[in-house]
Image 1 (cartoon, rainbow, N blue to C red):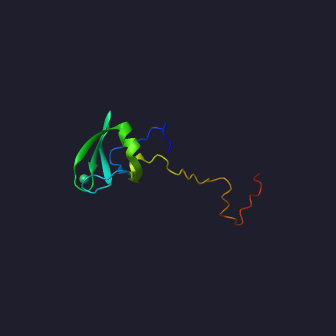
Image 2 (cartoon, helix red, strand yellow; image 1 turned 180 degrees about the vertical axis):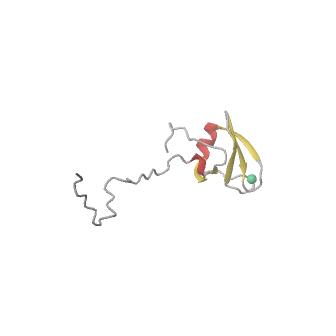
Image 3 (cartoon, rainbow, N blue to C red; image 1 turned 90 degrees about the vertical axis):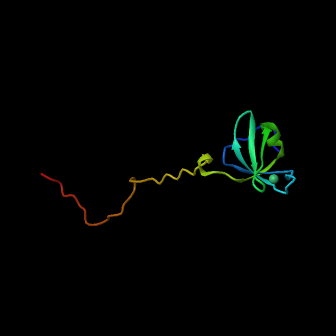
Length: 97
Ligand SMILES: [Zn+2]
């Protein structure tokens, strides 16, 4: 486990913790950020405030993350223009006078 790296939680994330809630739920959605992070049990709906460190330690995996927080968008930048030789017709350019 990487311990030194802070985990960037965001509101809307759904996380799975190592220890299940007494209700049996494992998945929690992040509802509040701050010194403490508010998480809501996906199974029973109970809200709990956990210190960030505590949550990081209990975190098992991210179940879902909202698309907004995904800044690792694959920047596919197709080279346009250069070398686009689509029209290979008779386009001879007789030297103008
Ligand atoms: Zn619960």
